[in-house]
Length: 50
Image 1 (cartoon, rainbow, N blue to C red):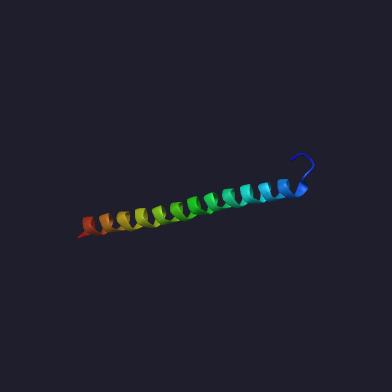
Image 2: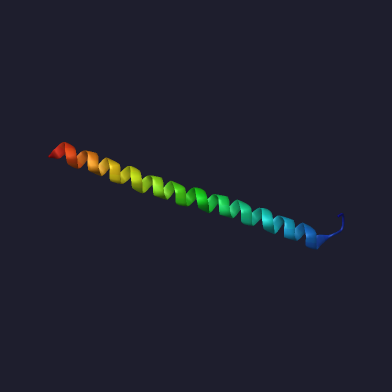
């Protein structure tokens, strides 16, 4: 496989896409967890005030 720039390029492209997918998945997951935590905290505070 030495001296095959196309294969190397495709490999780096796939690795980059996989890393990006993992990163965006973690970002979405973190965002969803943040929303849930905010909602739960808001609900607890509201029930404490009542």
